[in-house]
Image (cartoon, rainbow, N blue to C red; front, side, top):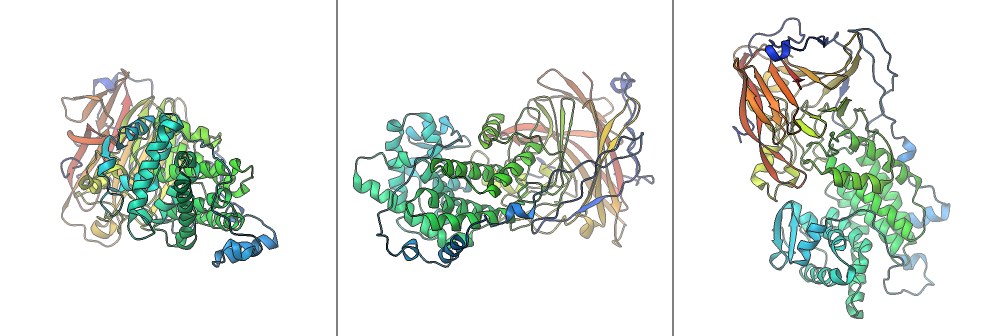
Length: 640
């Protein structure tokens, strides 16, 4: 891992970017003037979000001269009303309170005869499954991230599955894949056999991953939505057993949803409770109870610009999917969902679009891989939300610049706090860059997919700072990465400022950010300045290590700037060692130039949207520098 994800000399007194020494290719383009970095602006300080943050003020942009700057408009913030429990009558509030205290529906309506559990409606899911995974199920295998797990050899009890397979097997998300690959008569026997095997291994609630609140919530929601696959048998006893299991799981969630392993799992549990209240007979009290709990849980999960506090795009996708499926449950019983759920869904989509590249696929952030454009497009279509990406999602922590055919994504916030992070990464001040459908600079990604084709032992390395396109000192992480999947001490504060630079023939967006992850160990603050030309043909950057505090400044340290490359890029290194030419699959030609230290080529990996690790390369600028600090400048420029 040290070599896979393996920088300077004297500090810059002025603190401004140095122009890379041009070679012949750079000299040939004299039509584009150099972009000024501009004066040091007043930064916005961002600390880790421990509760739902307060919205920042929105300032309209102003067009001014070169070197002068204008703040950008931020996204609309969620309001307190968006997280208030749905408005109900006094009687319904009493019912919700009584049910929350443990009174069963029979106690709330003592004159009604207790009936056997039954479903009141059939749900039409809006989310398409994966036909390939469904076909594999019919052939006798679970298929996930390219790995086959024979159903006959699957341990349905005990912690013997990798985390991704645990979520699929115990969360029953495979029901949607099965339903998408063939007709119901062809799929129902497969679903019934797997359900029977799972139930035999888990006859009653207990410990282990099967009864984690998140898995139980996803499982119950999948059962309710794809109930026809489980209730197609002519055996009345089997159908009665299935419905009884639905009811028992819903009652277990009623009692245990507050003990969820994290806030995202709690949202899954409350979503399933609300769906059960809608679809199981005599569920009015449960529905009222579930709606109130769900809105409160979403308030603890979603920040003001609509991003989840785990900062994970996979978590963002999961919440959107849960709300889409719940909305389908409301439609099945011809009921209107609370307006808070629609408002939150509308706010969840724009931050997700912030992390989409020109090909429509997802960036590799906080353990995610490059989720396919097809899946993202299907999700957005099912949500019914028509909107644009947020450029400046400060509360979620990501910056986006779209210029011409180029897209820049920048992590400008601390990592998520431990109680929100599942596969948290030490990625502060990393960036990704794409042009058209080609990705030039990426992060390795894929930590959340470990356990499939990506080995579990590699997961911790994929979460490290060196697995991201940013700077690392002495191969230490800017935030400690722990073995249990959580994050330790490190970056606690990030300063970020975004400006528009305007002038004759050279307009650009300038983002400056800094973090304190290396202050306690080295007494150095990492500051990164990125400038993206308005036509998308040039990305200019400078990384500075600035002395901070009273730490000793004697001795030398090793610094490495890493730029992980997208797949299928051909490389040619310049004769002076300071430049590398990048030939993209679409025929375009780019050049990367270092301002002072040589660029070396090293091996790397990149996880695609299916969780498959692909071999690729990385550009590394490394050097020994004094502890008094240093600066590095670099340039990525389109040549053809």
